[in-house]
Image (cartoon, rainbow, N blue to C red; front, side, top):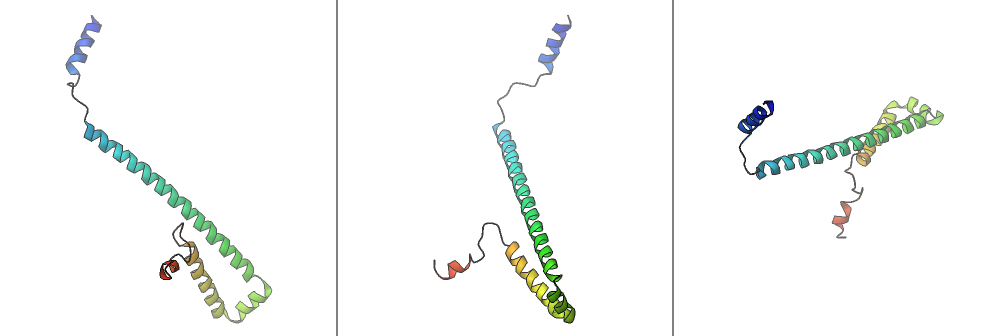
Length: 116
């Protein structure tokens, strides 16, 4: 008797039969594909940030090590303004090299100027 009642409830409470909503399914698939692309882009941005931070750390460690050498340290002690200027120029060069978009050569825009 319980099985007959369950069958009755299932038949009465079931949604009406209808064709699948293709537009809804396409919107859901598009949203999933967009989220996957965004996740891949986010992970590539994080990888790029980590690479740049490692490069900045390596350059800073190299500059610190060179700055500890006796001739360079005495030169910086004699004229701190010149030392600061050299460090700022080195930092600007570092930003120009590390901050460029991935896959683009340093002189990439020059090739357009000379017609090649």
